[in-house]
Image 1 (cartoon, rainbow, N blue to C red):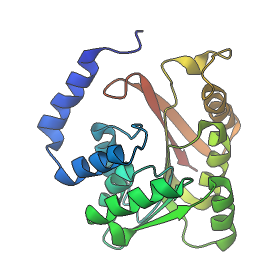
Image 2: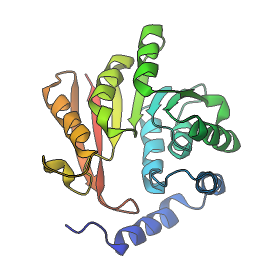
Image 3: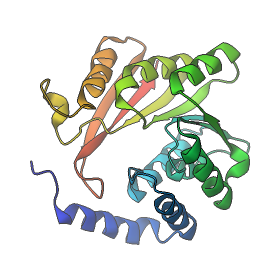
Length: 223
């Protein structure tokens, strides 16, 4: 399979036009990210809408996101929350978190979203020690090297029946190559191995093509 095809983005554009439509607040978020020099690695618009609909479909009231970047996916997730819902999103870089804070506030979702800045493993350990309401949905789109560790925390911090979503789990097919020169592949493979051995979750993954080229989402449900 080729790494890219212009038709993939064309189909995404068709889907957005017919099913999602123009969204000035989200356009402004992406423009602010670009102006601030953030990497252009956000989920696509179609993927963002999928996250919103998953949150709505599961009735999520408490969502955890690992990897905020500029807040694009956080805005989508927050839109899917119930009226009194909350989203806790983790970001390593203070500069990115500051951009995200502005974007989320301008999108009208500020009251629902808490951004925690710092190294994610330490933040997750703190959340675990704190206790509190378990999460209904966890979305992970961060450093792939720690994906298996994030899985452990996601399970620990979630209720039975919670939905876990991991992004970028195919990597142009590199995930099946144990000798891949993509430094993000080993951590992604570790996630699959951890899920294979973990009796606490049921999981699957789907390959995707589109504006973000050839990749995939992994979905798991906590038993």
